[in-house]
Image 1 (tube, rainbow, N blue to C red):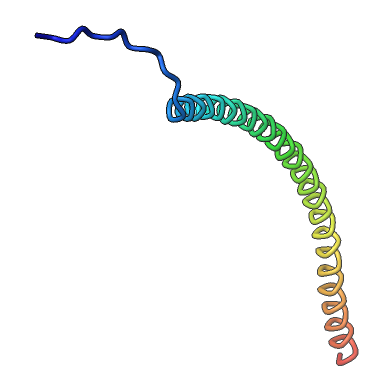
Image 2 (cartoon, helix red, strand yellow):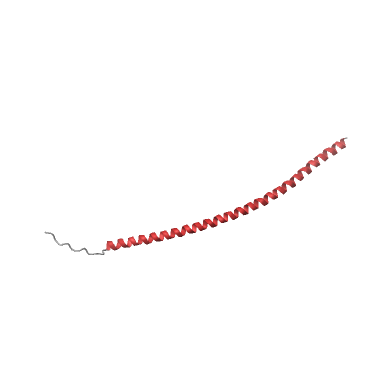
Length: 103
């Protein structure tokens, strides 16, 4: 002979409440972490774009400075060549005046 079964009652004991609160906390924490990660990635991409723009602008400035320096060096080289030719001419004049004096 079987005993009649009682219908199961929905009981909310302390462990069930604790598990539901923990599950809810994990879900809320996961969503918060996902939102923070998305925001951080967006900020990082914006920073990267700004940083690349800064590097491009700085590269243009450096190239302009290099071009100006190259022009300065070219003008200085031509001036130095003039001095070199003057020293050569002075040496030749000294040799010719020395040979003229000797003669």
